[in-house]
Image (cartoon, rainbow, N blue to C red; front, side, top):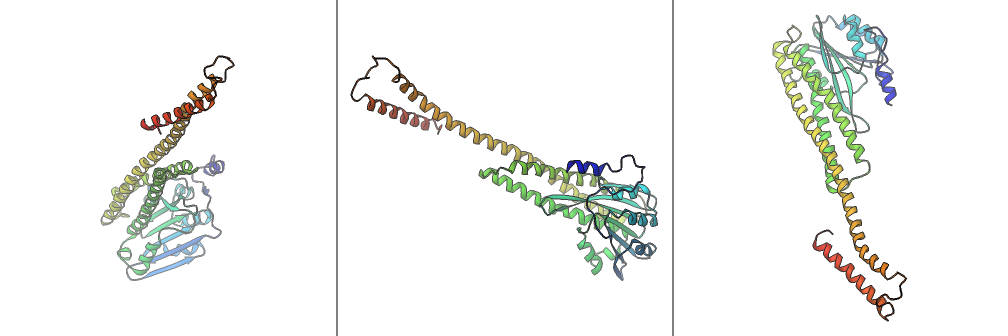
Length: 355
C-alpha cells in the first residue's frame, strides 16, 4: 500500500510545470456535473452530461455554481478550465490531490483548496480534496467522487432560505466552506467518542490485544485531521484581508465566523491529541501493573517454598545421625512444621499487605 501511494504522489516527477495529471485513487466512470443558476427570483438546477453544456452559464446575470465530480476526467476539466481562463498551474493543482489547504489569488478569480473530512465504510476518518474557483458571479467546485456535505446548501438554494439567493458568489463560497467546517465538528465528536471508549476500556481493565494498534491508528487520524484543519485558518485569514471586488466587505464578517469555528476545532484537536498520548501512557502503565502483579505472586510463592525446600533438603541428605531420623512420628512432625511455616508466612504477607 505504501509503495503504491508513493508512486501515486510521484507520477509527475520529470513532468513540466502545469502538467495535468490526476494523482488520486478514486475514479468515476462518468463525469458528473451539476449546475445551480439562481438569483433572488428563480433557481435553475441541472445535471449535465458534458462540460461543454456548462459554458453557457459563464455570462449569465445570475449566480452560478458548477459542481464537478470526477477528477480523473482530466480532459473535461481542462476544457472547463480553458473556457474560464484558469491558469495551467491551477488546473495542475485541481487534479493533484496532495495539496495542502491554500488560497491563490489571480486577477479575475480566487483559487481555494480545502480538505473535506468524512467517516469511511471502515469507520475511519478519511479526507478528500475539494477545490473552489471564485470568479465574478460564479463558483466552480471540484471533487474526486460523488458524495459530499453540501446537501443543506443545495436545499437552501432550492428553497430560497436565508440569504443564499440574495447574495453574491462570495457568499456562495462562504456557505460551501462553512458546510465543510461544520462537518469537522461531527468528525471531532466521533473522535472524542472513540477516545472515551478506549479510556473506559483501559480503566475497567478490559484491554484487548488490538487496543495498542487502535490507539496508534487514532494518533494517525488526529494528525490527518490536524493537517487538514490548521492550514485552513491561514486561508480564511487571507480571504478576510483580501482587497478585491470578488470578496465584498459585508461578506467578510461571515468568513470571520468560519475562522472562529476553526479556532474551536483546533483547540479540541490539541486537547484530544494530549488525551491520546495520555491513553498510550495509561495503557503502558496498565500493562506494567499487570506484569508487576504477576511478578509479585510468583515472588511470594517462591518465598514460601524456599524455607520448605531448605527443610526437605536437610532431611534428604545421606547422614546417619540426623536428629529425629528414626523417630516414629518424625515424618508427621515435619509436615506439621512445614504447614505451620506456610500458614505463618501467608499470615505475615497478609499483615504486610503483600497479598
